[in-house]
Image 1: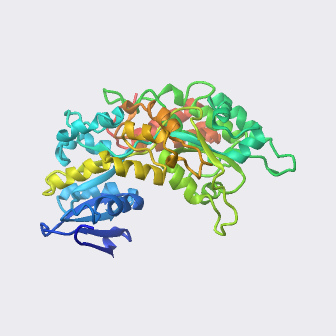
Image 2: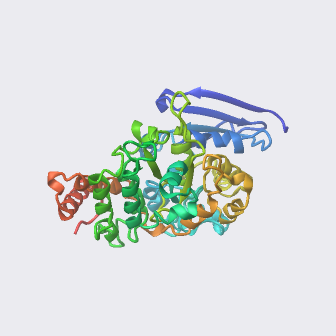
Image 3: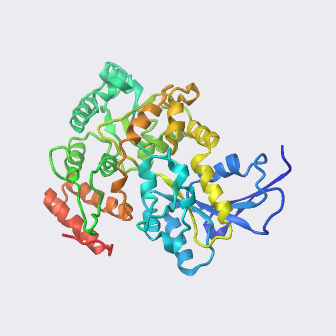
Length: 445
């Protein structure tokens, strides 16, 4: 143990109840604290667990502020506009960080001197973090390929096997996905264990993140025009039509993603699977796999497969705010959480996450300590790697968060046969009108 370390925890009313951890290393201090904003409490905890430790002996304090995603952007925008109460380092979520990268020179410190560290990172994360001016403005900590997680016991009962290789054959295309969903719906078991059948997914609109993450074209082309990828609306197995089949044929549980029933479906015996990014296996499924009594649990009854399409959802990018007096320390902080082998491997194994280092993740494929008990002992990293290699970072734009939501809203209206969306053309027209009314700087054809 090297020296002493002071750790204190306080509450800040300004953060609306968010925890603020004061992490101090021993030694000389600049009389101030490097401020780090993060949107997730687990990510805040990693600073104490891996960075500001007694062994590392930083010699300065880090103030970690957990700011919920729904508040992060407004708060950061206000601070950048006024130049007050600015953090030094910020963890930004992938759907929204591009607006800052695109205007990086105005608000962010370039990280070009860290470019040599990116050779083993996934290229799309580096491309997405590079501004129009050619400067690197962020480094991604994790990569977030999506998979389809399913219940082993249900797979064995319905398809005769819970082996991921065999189960994938039933869900490897959207056509097979729908066919298998119908089989699940009509299955009741030898002893009527499933009197209402089995729903293939909880919320039919969870397919939205799969289709949006699998597009060939982003929402905005090089000329600033709105672009709608054909996979979203053309053909029998487009997003629009798959959503309608899931809804009309009662193949999903018809919940809303993230509501109470959506979470209880994780432990209840009604739903076969969930589309989840790597981080969601732990955050959404494992953390919600038991009821409040603890008597009903699906822990260990899960496995993951590629599913009908590759996609990605989320991701964490660290940026350094322009003008920080903690520039060297901030860059070292960003470097650590994007390159440190011990941290990246241990975090991945503890949280089932997939980090932004190809070699480290490849190492986990044959590491038995990376076998996931929640997934029935499955090592998911070969599947994660397969999905990660298919990610198309060119579709990432600064408008994704808003436009994804607008499109899913009109896909929902079409699926449910709302009056103003009786046809796909009607729904597309209304979607375009919604985008135009939003005031986004996009041309609508």
